[in-house]
Image 1 (cartoon, helix red, strand yellow):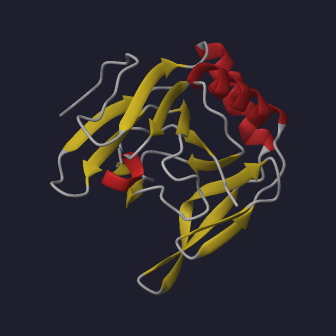
Image 2 (cartoon, rainbow, N blue to C red):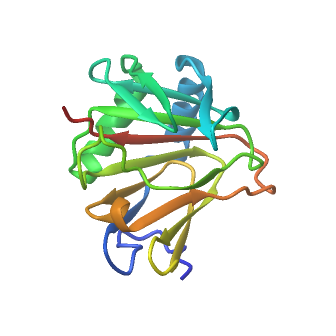
Length: 199
């Protein structure tokens, strides 16, 4: 199922909710936020463990929050840094639009469409169970694909510059998602995923 209509509706046919709100702000504001985040954020190459081997990723990451929360994924633990001014601004916009509240954000910087993200679910033990995860895209438009864990049914959308996608409910329990490599996308992309840490 291909879903490229940027209307506020559930992209998933069952067992979860993924609402694409489209543009969170005007293009010029999204451009300014992209530039500010490139400048303000202390980007670091990610270290993940796959099949017992540590790999340094081409993409760069950052982890920010209300407090120095620890967050572990792929056998790698990060401690949250304070919000930057641009991150705080995006967080306020996301919360006003979605009606959800968040206390942390994982950022990914993809330098081009040659870099992507493999199938996974955001179901780490530190996160609020069935809590909302808000994904903001800045920069190059990229494909984003959902795959049902049981029957491999798929849903797909093109995430535009400045857009907001919110996943809620049982989405992480029943669905995986990925950012496929997209070689025709030559410009960089920043993805901000706002989350809620508990405990």
